[in-house]
Amino acid sequence: MTPGTASLCKSIFRGVSYFVAAWGALFIRRWIKRHRERVAQSWPLVEGVILSGSVMHIRKTSYFRATLQYAYFVREYRTGEYFHEFSTEADADAFVRLMKDKRVQVRYKRSNTGKTVLEQSVVEHLMLAPASTEPPSPPIAALSGIR
Image (cartoon, rainbow, N blue to C red):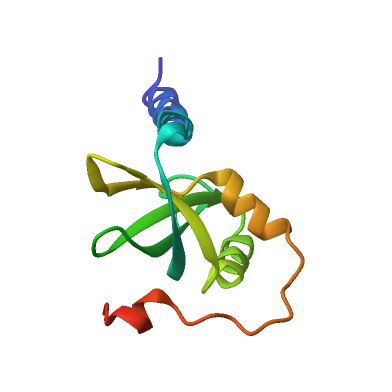
C-alpha cells in the first residue's frame, strides 16, 4: 500500500468513525428522552411556562439542538430544560420563538421535585394548536422574581 493510499484509507475511516459516533449519540439521546417520558407517566402534573430558548449546532452533524428553559412551582419556583433536534437552524429558531411564553404541563417526581419531564406530546400539541387570540400571559419568572 502506498503512503497516499494509506493516508486516504485513514481519512475515510476517521470520517466514517465520526459519522457513526455522531449518529450514535443522537440515537442514545433520543432513546433516553423516550425512556424518561415513559418512567414519568405516573408522576404528578404541574403547570409551567416556557421562559426562554436557545439554538446550537450539534458538533460533527448537520443537526441543531433547540433548548427550552421552563419554570414551574412545587413548594418553590424551579426551572427545567427541554431539548429537541432539528435538521435546520431556521426550524430550530422558529420552534424556540413559537414556544416562548407558552404554558405547559410538566411532570415532576414527587420524591425529588427538581426532577421533571416536559413530554414531547405536550410540546407537539402546542405546536399544532391554533394561535390564541388572547394576549400571552406573563411568564412565571415575572411573577416570582426569578432572574
